[in-house]
Length: 313
Ligand code: UDP
Image (cartoon, rainbow, N blue to C red):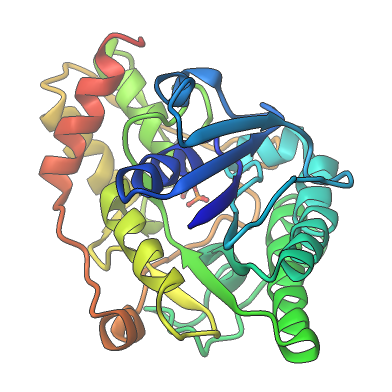
């Protein structure tokens, strides 16, 4: 297949590019480096089946030749990044989705959209099944991300229903691993960076809020299966191993063999506003329609991620 991956220089886009190259496909990566990094794809540059276009997908995009699939992964994805870039975040999750859908329609390509557990907002149901409509503040600081992703889901399904486009939607839950940016502000790079430099780990609030962390290899496998499946409606891909952020802080300290303490802080710049109190994927649908479940436990995932960050701090 000839595949376009937007956000190819990002954490997930670059790992997906690797997977498609490994499977023998041809990949065209697209990124404007707003949060992505050339370091993530440098090893692919010069590969005979990889090419790269430096372009903002929120503007009209042109790709020559046939395309069999488009995976739209371009977007700032950490609360820090979308607070810093709220308008590009909204544009890539609306105009960018529209442009890539239009391209998919023109090329007759299958389309996969990177959605998010943020579509559930601060959920009143735990774990979250795909049928849950969510509890999203439409005008809070996180809304630029949450509402763009929700709008995109609606647009993707409108293209499916009206134009008959083959579409897929993956709802991605917290994912971590090598190639995250050390300073992206998310809890995994923050805690690992702090632990490796023996600085206090900054737990927001009282740390009782929960997340469920998935290693990137499990996500990539789930996305690959979803693309080749027949499932049009959204599918959660995440690890149901739920823990509090305080428990997670302790786990990072232990696995990094760190002397760090834990401090409790309350960021007032919007990062912590509407912070979901619980989050855990219901993955029954992924098990049923993709025969997928996560394989990598927290200890192994943290081991690899801490090793990656060790020479970055
Ligand atoms: N968090 C924290 N300390 C940090 C960064 C994040 O306690 O230094 C918390 C944050 O409030 C949230 C959880 O960790 O409850 C996950 O945050 P992240 O930014 O990774 O992503 P989110 O799941 O909120 O999109």
